[in-house]
Length: 491
Ligand code: AMP
Ligand code: MG
Image 1 (tube, helix red, strand yellow):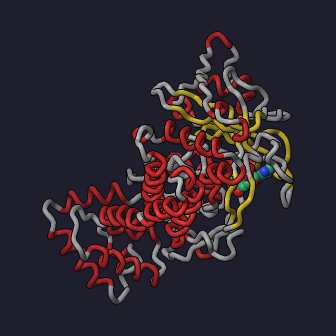
Image 2 (image 1 turned 180 degrees about the horizontal axis):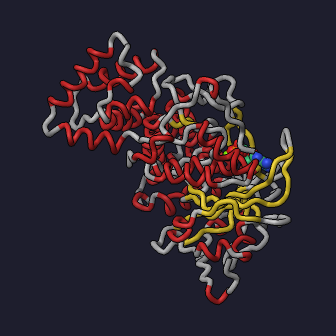
Image 3 (image 1 turned 45 degrees about the vertical axis):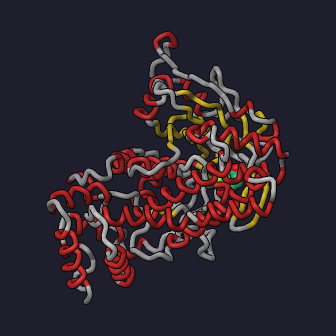
């Protein structure tokens, strides 16, 4: 570990715009120091892409920043205010266990939030301790990096440090802090907060800020607020389609956990589906199945309706007319989502052009997969490599006919099977972060201080479409004894 400051280029390059919003949007809040920080995991390559020196981050000085013991030059730490519908109920929330250090301008000129998750109490902590346990922070690190590997927009993870302090949940657990990097942390709930708790100037301020930061191409439009709504709807439709295509279940799609930038955010009790079943729920707190796999698209539309409601005063001075505009925009969601999903499904089956009957072909396959509880990822992998016996469907009565239909469909399009197989390889991941492998990695790290299991898993997840020999051990679904699986809220 190098402690020679002269040789360490830290690389902080803050330009903080959120603090220039009206005061009601945040409270200045320094992270609360911890006893004895230690590095658990650092994303070296990602640090470099942010302009940060991994050696510096590993040094005592860098570690102090990642632990919240020191505030780096140029940072202006704050906790953000927001509200949100949690399981359908509207509440005031805010960063109860997160502090935004500031916005880093990367060497490529990108603006990203640098946020510490678990840095102690803030004015929005309510009864919480503002802290996080090591297990859930490692979980967020693994799953967010896996999502990035899959090519799905997501917040990223720069590091997890342990604090040397316990946190008390149902049991005593080691405390940790995650450094999360996001395009921003503006949520549907941020707009709900402005619309319900703020002034009309506040609402306009956050809308203008969001346009400038995430949608500059429509910022000067006459109907920019309506176009903002449309643009957010479009990004979310694309995002949710990507989730469905890889079998990702967010677990807590509350409106405060939906990012306006279109990134996947707030990894709590999320998980990837093994056997295909739209009713799959993993979260222990979702007893009604509100956020089940198959409900994610309609829930996204519901959340976007809350976003649209918040924007009403900006859409038109006549409220009835504003409502009409909002409804029209929201009514586009199902079609947009469906289009992205269908495109993605065609790719998963090696179909490179469009035919009317493709949807029936896809739905017939999914119907069989559901009935036979086939492994979602491995069935598509088996088709990709033409290993019928591995589809989990070869015994199914209808499968033979379906398989012939599918082959005929692929052959009916111009081009070769090679092109279709190529497309399938790029659309069907070999590896997803399966719960039993994620848990195994977390357990080795959190209980025994052995991070090698997690490092190997992260390596396999880095290029999920590589279909390499070394990834095969990560392809197996859990043993029946390892199911059903429950994920617990990431507090
Ligand atoms: P989440 O379920 O992680 O999206 O969090 C929902 C709300 O609870 C947010 O306002 C969080 O900041 C807050 N929260 C979660 N855990 C804690 C904690 N340990 N201490 C304080 N606030 C928390
Ligand atoms: Mg949240």
